[in-house]
Amino acid sequence: MPEVTISDDESFERALKRFKKKCEKAGILSDLRKHRHYEKPSARRKRKVNAARRKGRRTRAY
Image 1 (cartoon, one colour):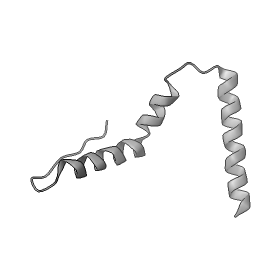
Image 2 (cartoon, helix red, strand yellow):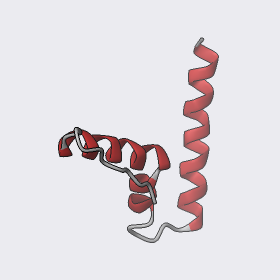
Image 3 (cartoon, rainbow, N blue to C red):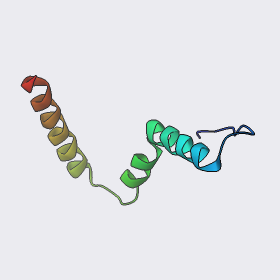
């Protein structure tokens, strides 16, 4: 779990922004969305294959 310590001169909004950035970097929200509903193994494989194709297209384009 990401943890943020707030100094005396730091605003709450700034600390919240740092916390959100740490959560995003740790992949907590994407993991939560991924586990929200059950995904069949065939659907998971299909999603991974499509992601690999997209990634391959991006790397070949450059």
